Figure 1: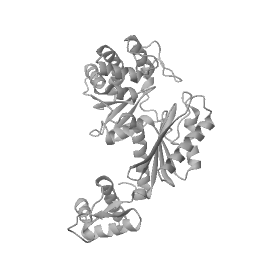
Figure 2: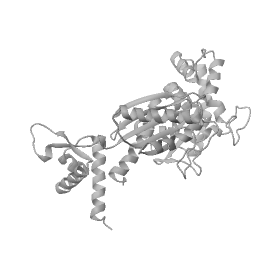
Figure 3: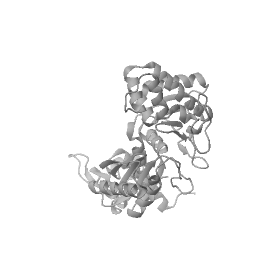
Figure 4: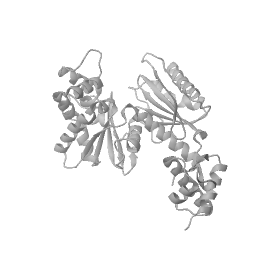
Amino acid sequence: MPASPSTARAINDRLALGLLQREGPLTANQLKQLTGLSRPSVADLVERLQGSGLITVVGEAGAQRRGPNARLYGIVADRAHLAALDVRTGGLSVVVTDLLGAVLAEASLPIGGDTGTEPAVERAVALVERTAHEGGARRLHTVGIGAPGLIDPASGELRDTTSLPAWHRRLAGALQERLPARVLVENETNLAARAEQREGAARDRDTFVLLWLGEGVGAAVVLDGTLRRGASGGTGEIGFLPVPGTASLPSATGCDGGFHSLACAAALRELGAEHGLLEPGEGAADVVRRAVATGHGGYLDAAADRIAVGAAAMAAILDPGCVVLGGELGRAGGDALAARVGERVTAMSPLRTEVRASTLGGSAVLRGALLAAREAAQDELFGPGR
């Protein structure tokens, strides 16, 4: 059955808006060529989108051509302002952008472990409000939050986890109360995977695993272009994976004894001390970076042995074809560590699996949170993608 005229117009409008978002300002003639629509149809959609305040004339294609076809049309970037948050155990970072993703303001705030829940929430909300004001955003349309922990697939809320600060769970609700904005919360590893697929190491992959190596370990699973969450939102909780080389087994209340005990920051920091690489006051990422810089093969080989246990398990179960090493330790190890892990996975599994290092550095979670906020805002303003 052919689409109704109103449905066809909505599809054409969304197609044109998507092109303007990806390609930048375009003339009516360029829109005609890229969409395959007739000249009258393009003229109609340009008039509709201008009338709705979504696009405007931003210039002309060239000095030699005048008239409607030479006008450059672009999305009205300040039609909506967005905020993205990367929530850490010890604080948070925030970035405010326009609808096209141009950064207007950004800031970070440490929140110590001795800070009470309500004061921590108040400081975090105040940071978002202040950053939005500094960026000229009088009203935020959508806020995307990346946080450690499980997201309940039914409610979309951060689940209660005793190992995380209580202010993490209160933050989204407090922002929703104080701001006239839509607030979205997502697991940090899932957001990092979204960013790596769109802008980073997995741009050429629709199936891959992001292995997160930081204070904790986890994984995001993307199969056939879709992020997989599982029945309870726990897909990728690889820290609980029972593995050889630990003194105990993980339990329902703690991942000590699982893959976490082999590859988390504390474990790789201790490994650095064993290899004489640890300086006073340093963390695991410092150790990994020094090992890469000095070519300390002993440490890198030992770390790769540990990380490959988890990577090979994911490869054997999911056959993703690609594992991206993310988190602060994956970023610190870069290509040198990824290559060593890849060699070990190849030796352990008959399934061909490429291991890559994250290319987004410390911005992966923020980038993923921003992408989530932009997509949600654009679905509301432009109409759902088809």
